[in-house]
Image 1 (cartoon, one colour):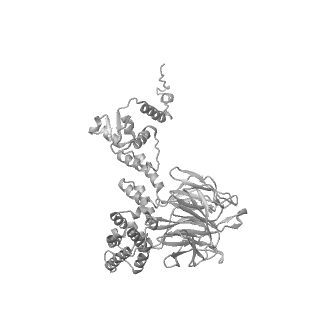
Image 2 (cartoon, one colour; image 1 turned 45 degrees about the horizontal axis):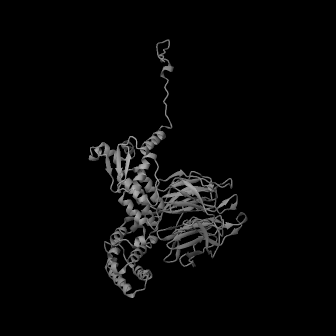
Image 3 (cartoon, rainbow, N blue to C red; image 1 turned 180 degrees about the vertical axis):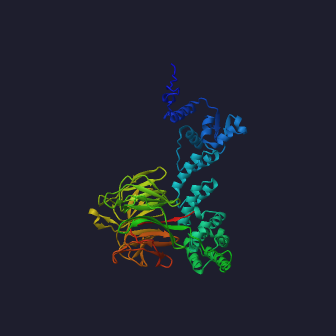
Length: 579
């Protein structure tokens, strides 16, 4: 067979002589990987053995190891003594972890669990399997919670996991009042507590009372052994002590003691007096005016028409900044919740129809960019949305004009929605928040076309996948906001100015100071130890509201502290801590 070299009448090559076909076999990468896997399984063409800490050998191919690990690439290409070895001993890597890493090399897959993730990340960090380390880091971010954020922070710093470190700090800042009640905090050594209190962002965001509580709870865990460290820890936090904090500290210490031992309590009193005498005069060590690192994000809403703006408020300067608008300008009655630094917008319906939407948009507060998320399993509007255990939960709402009880959650690591147990009673236009490991849902409508107002508080625990009734709301309504702050839940808004407070530990309701305005479908968020409510609609005045109120739980007072850029109701309101 021969090829022809044809020419035109002018002696030039014809176009056909330049014809080429760039063939690319789409099965090639998969088949090469599968072949390497077979060679590994059958022990063919192997040229290096890896030995784990217990002595087991893994006969591998250098080229395969080098393709996924810069550690082995350097070892086998640079002038290192291991280059000529037939066995590489990995004394710090156990057999299960090495099995996972070798399987990853030959299959591209690794099974990561809560039992192996830390040891797998350590080995991936040591042997420079970058993709596996990143996957393990993302897995740990997914597991971050109040009861493990301190350990995660130290682990992230040790292995230079910047994303994990950042999110662990964010959890610590947002939930420090809960962290100090955890055994993980109370078991810390004095050096680690001192280092923690000196964290720049921690000192800037938290008020003195919360930091004093942390020190007192740590001291009360072992007063006899720790009383000598009290003053130095207060000094480390640069606290300008006030007598009101000292009185609170005395009461808290006695409350924290498992047995009311007067001898131990008197030792604490002496340490407290010493600390007060040393710190009561202003000095260079007292705390400077703090630059708060928290911002309120107000997303969308409604004011005679759907709003798509993203507004950011700095409570210190009372300055607003506008972010990138939501991509969908015609949607309303959607759910808004925060997960890390990302704000999830789910569901809703369009202005010209009541057809429920399943679409999800994600706003990054770090980059001011929107991306489209995975659609929900069930379309819905006027539903609740919260973040729990690294996932986004959407709860209840309306579909086809009727309230629904379906609940599902989005796992950002797996990028999929997963259905869970239905609510005890499906409701729409309810409100929800998270306290510790529990989702609380209050109020809302149920019954035929949502004609009845629900008076119960429903709770969901993910560990048992179960909904239950916890208590009865003293003033059942719809269009309320439920917010958790410290160990309590606050119920605000609606058609009255009533503020109800529920303390789950005591199963007690109390009525607090009233808001300045009646706020139907307002926004609400806990930030820097206070409760903020924004906008809403006043049925008594027939107007949309623009003002922002702040509640001080120590003084039991509400005050107007600013205004939204524009009046709005049904908007999302979240607090993001910058780290």
